[in-house]
Image (cartoon, rainbow, N blue to C red):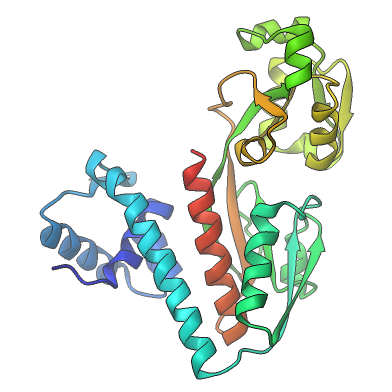
Length: 294
């Protein structure tokens, strides 16, 4: 029988692809991570990872077991939260920096659940993409999609990758049909991005492939609105498409332009009980959500 605690190491290595990065995430040593993964594989009688010079890569058996490990990890997080409630009431305030479209249920649902579990904690969501706000002390935790931040004093936890996919409304598809490839988008109304959103990797790639000719949006919320009313075709995160019945995928995802998703906090507050509990709670939910939509 394997040690239940080894699930934590399995999930960390699967998320980061590295025993060193996983050690930093869980607050352990690289040798401990390697030893616990080896012990887990021996107990299961399975090879979960391929060890390569570039890092750890899940085997087919590892990928099959990962959803079960994620469910067990989430259950353990919830059990720990319930135990914390029973022992003592967490209290304090958390300023959570989210994207401008932070009203997305993927983010707000777990926030509301956390406050229900911990009524003594107040979570203030601060819309904005500036992860620098965390380093400056203007926010305690931030959710950000994009390249790995490199500001000093920040603690990073990668929760997955956001995949982008061309999509349109059901009404637009009925009126104009669907493109068969990216090159066919030249015959359609294409909605692009402007401002900070246009500088993101997905939209830089999208704009290289096709020139927007209809509208440009400054936020995901604006793009969703344009797409929903049938203004044209744009790219949206797969998790957003899954949450809107009136929006459909037109083409396969842009495989070359995923966005890494990060939770960010500061070294000086990461071990504060209510901050750490919130970080674990949100990370578990986002990791499971992004994994399901891959």
